[in-house]
Length: 162
Image 1: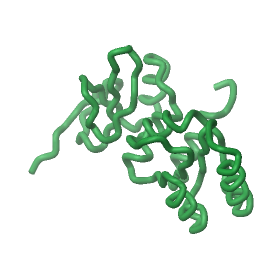
Image 2 (image 1 turned 180 degrees about the vertical axis):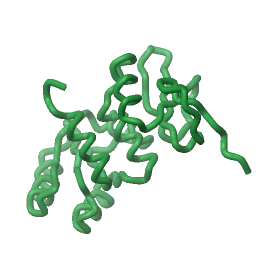
Image 3 (image 1 turned 180 degrees about the horizontal axis):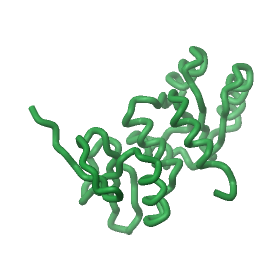
Image 4 (image 1 turned 90 degrees about the horizontal axis):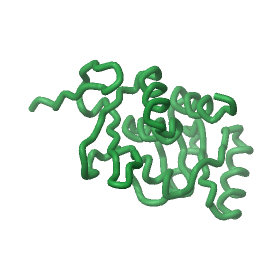
């Protein structure tokens, strides 16, 4: 069975659909990552090339961190939810832990202590709803990125004055 081929809307190169990240514009005009390729509406596909991601973020006002999280999820490099995130930290598979800005103080302290003990970077970013939406899940107050390259790109995108 042949896999569908799609084009990146930025560089116009053709890739198998599974290698691209899909974005969908809602009725209110906001653009969201569609990791599971299930959202209604016409989608646009972007490849994982950093130049294409940068251009898409500038041109369409996409949140680069959330876009990178969607890519990491699609590549299988995200552990989300308390149990999976804890397991990734304890096994030292986590390269970066992200806690939502609306996570409880207990959750924040719990993961901060775990990460500090193991020297794993931890950041607070976005709401639980937006984090979950970026990876195609329900609300997520914490998640771990398990790929060094993707976690580095996320940390770079979080740097001020970018």
